[in-house]
Image 1 (cartoon, rainbow, N blue to C red):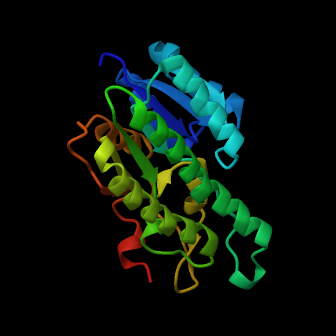
Image 2 (tube, rainbow, N blue to C red):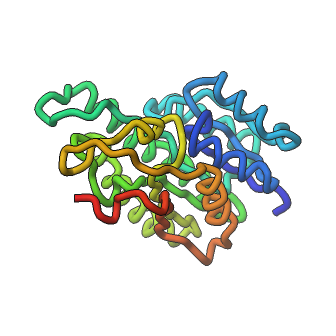
Length: 250
């Protein structure tokens, strides 16, 4: 196919923006999904000559109606979908488990886990029934899909659950050439990780500055995964700042 179609959630900043720009730079047509239309338009503006292939769509991934509207629009406009990067996510300030409000827990679960499920489900429906059949879904798991930070029970729980989502999608997608993988990212330099430069609580309780790396390398990794033929898969890939302490976390 001369045209390849992708959806990137959380495309208004950080890792999502880097992934969307990498795909656009490689000739993909990309739906930029996120809650803030102005941020999505900013991502589109950064695409340069590829901006005509960027489609900003204001979307709340935790809202089933919003997700349905996004994928119904793309199916009608494009007729197919080749790639989904489930990247959108959220967190709450670190704190003791006993102080975590139910509403904050539920919000993190709704965005990180339910949002990833809703988008994967909608993509699966399109990919299963299109011709040629199939496509690829990549979920953003994070280093927190492997090991927790202190006081992070909501975020860490959802990211561990995303790994289960990834594995099940990979299994259930086999008969339909729908391939699923996961990227686990540690300390990419984004607005979400800006606090790393001021110090992050370690397992010992002390605060330490942690190194970061340019998010464009996440974008190039996503592009590599997206461009694989459907008979090959990177099931899990971990990309981190080389000197971040996650190997020794605990």
